[in-house]
Image (tube, rainbow, N blue to C red; front, side, top):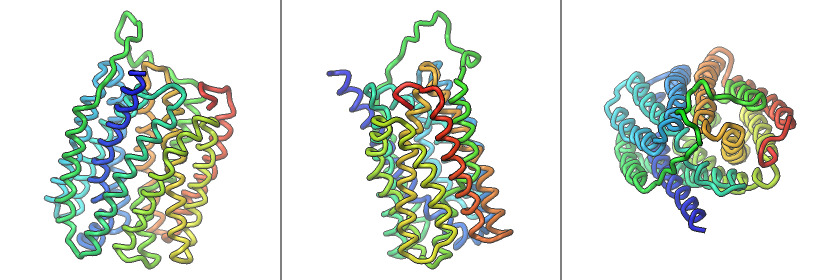
Length: 391
């Protein structure tokens, strides 16, 4: 019983850390595309370039960080270092006077995410009660998106009251400091893998099904461009700057509310019960975004986009953690994060080019098609030889 209490409290602590850090991040994130275009005069293609470079530079750190956390079992320390970048990010943003400064700030933020994500997810997996891994990741995602929702709400209030961007950037540092302080209470369990020698990257092996799944993730990510394009598309369709931020709040609230039920769904009925509908829903949302016809439809699509995020986030991490060798969970989760980051580099560049050279619908038609294709591929892959917990 004591172990269960410890596990639950550790997951809650990690969730609270993410909640405060994401509150800080999302006070800023929905303002970035508006700040770049309105205050600095940058084109949409520049936004795609910034997001792509920032994600790709951090992508390979996810594998390295996951592997280091596995070998040296210093996941908590890596998590602390990674989350601390959230404060440095805001300070660099405050000092920026051009899109190059924003690029440096975003790179700082994404490098921090690259360092912390795999070790943190491994801590969640280690702390989870058997048979409830999807629910554990869902609980963490609920806290994460609750913080995001609070941050976006604050960003909306800043915009609606006419406060300048830099004031919002300055205030966003406060919740980040709270989150970093809470990491000290997180406990890391050192695991004895009963090996006489320290594990080496050469020992890292993935099953054929996991490789196929990660390949599908990469294909999907080629069409999953930065959310900044969704915000720009909403503004183009007639929403004000503050209204656009409010839409992003709706997305975050939707994900937060549905994250735990989606994770539990995958625990009870298998990972495919959440992953296949999640990818299909993404495809339908993006195709819908390409044909926006009313404000009500836009709001509905942002709610549905939050549902996609809830379905995918917990179930996907749970599937990868289960399918990977126990001693290389962090490494496998790092590979997953790396593929997402590299995919975002290409997808953001593709989206920017399609937006400028064809029209603003093109990135969403492309992403929607890849989303539907990914749903089909995931359904086929998960019908292969069954992994633990009925994936």
